[in-house]
Amino acid sequence: MSFVSESIHKLSSWVMKPQHKKTMYSLSEGSLQDESFLSRKAATLCELHRLGFSIPPAFIISSDVSMDFYHSGGHKFDDNFMPDLKAAIDSLGSSIGRVYGSTSGPAPLLLSVRGG
Image (cartoon, rainbow, N blue to C red):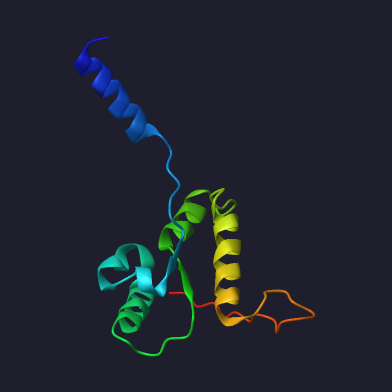
């Protein structure tokens, strides 16, 4: 195999390799420039957080998750979604000393889900 064809082969295998798509974002990871995959509301919250406004602890589910679910016919989330969601909930809970689903011990973590 020549250098050129070997390079093309390596490049195409890298481009075609399925990559883990990021599904969750913290408030500190987003900004107004990320509106295309966070939504306007979420991007605005990220920007307010960045500017120092008091925003409750939160995480954002990318709008790509919704689009992928819609394109699957409304039947299936991406394989990475549920583990990413569990990790985001656990991280949020540990940041404020609460546990999702707790019936004893630390106070339970209560969540509010916003859309749009």
